[in-house]
Length: 510
Ligand SMILES: Nc1ncnc2c1ncn2[C@@H]1O[C@H](COP(=O)(O)OP(=O)(O)OP(=O)(O)O)[C@@H](O)[C@H]1O
Ligand SMILES: [Mg+2]
Image 1 (cartoon, rainbow, N blue to C red):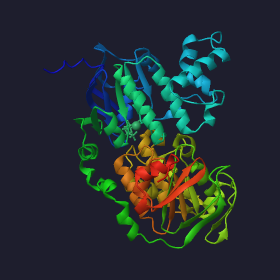
Image 2 (spheres, rainbow, N blue to C red):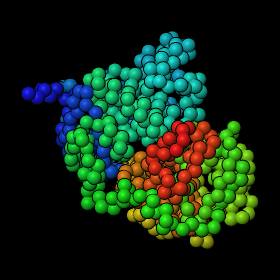
Image 3 (spheres, rainbow, N blue to C red):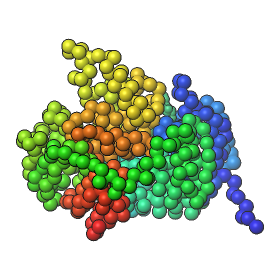
Image 4 (cartoon, rainbow, N blue to C red):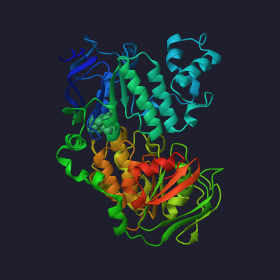
């Protein structure tokens, strides 16, 4: 006898939503049952976030119906959906925090909004309630700090903690781990499983397939706004990738196949480009020397707060050197700001896309050419033709999907925005390129494309920072592991496995 299948918490039927000529959702039908963790996956621009915005009341569908616990559900707005028990963590975390407010206020936004007046929301009450929310989520956060002073991962955790603290029937998480390290992602997975065990239905979006495999009971694959396949555990990665990417599946195979050992012998690296002596990843860290050679890809990995970004920022002139000195092609190199570094041939692509790389309202073309405006100028005038050609090259090389080069960048899906802001630097081809978390939010196909271009970048020397050991193993010739601001080990590609890197990252031996 089989157990009766409980009725779904949420059932979606024939859901559609277009933006101009783009059919973001093109007749989506799916359901999620109580206690189930359903993975929602698909290539960048497949429609995942649009579906989530509809379910969470942020966007109205143009056709189709939704039921929640068997009753018609057409939320008038996000608060309406929340009140009905649909709790959502959106992909763009900064949609979920209020800059200028403290961490405590951000943790308790719901009760502040609910209670309305200042009467109940005294600082002491807010702090006490925030402390309880943080503790329930197992977070140690500086409650009085302005939220914008926290790193992206911490802001993400605030948004997640708040969603988990609410009464939920349906919990929706859109790429919740994109800014988290493996340990934090594991902690989140435990919380998600606990929520499901209590009967909540979970819809979970991620581009990290390992995470999907270990967490989800079922995987719904969206492509071009439609559900293409639904897989039930045990899940097979190759089949999932094929369903995600359709006819474009073939080029992705090398992601898993690219054994570092094969590569190590083939790669030849040239002369030292950037050398650093006695530098520190963070104040208080152990000083070390670093040399970066032509054609080399150096991976830098470590947990959140281990000093990856701090190191890259120093190399790229975005932050003063903590100690030591640097040389670029033999000459002293001490950039006072990123522009000086770029002029010397060292470019830093920052980790936080929405805060540091995106100018809302600007076109895709303008984003592509921003770092290289001079190269697109003729006699002091910007050449539109040259700019458009560059935008087309970047779009073609990385498969940027969206409404075109003249569209405002925010109309691209998150992963496609990421392809633009990383791709423009690969197009610019500086001497040294520093990429901080370049794979964040990009699908497996684009990850392979970015990885390939990084690896075939001629004499350009590339530093890739990522908290995901798997990403590092796929792309790097050599890996520097940081732990609490100090080097914890350096491995050649042939020796670097995700397991060894993970051990070093958490302060153990390789
Ligand atoms: N405000 C908007 N204006 C115009 N087009 C939009 C807008 N929002 C989304 N789109 C388009 O809708 C499509 C689906 O986008 P969506 O954000 O849902 O993709 P996604 O599956 O979440 O991708 P990602 O993995 O990159 O986050 C994309 O082609 C995108 O360009
Ligand atoms: Mg999305």
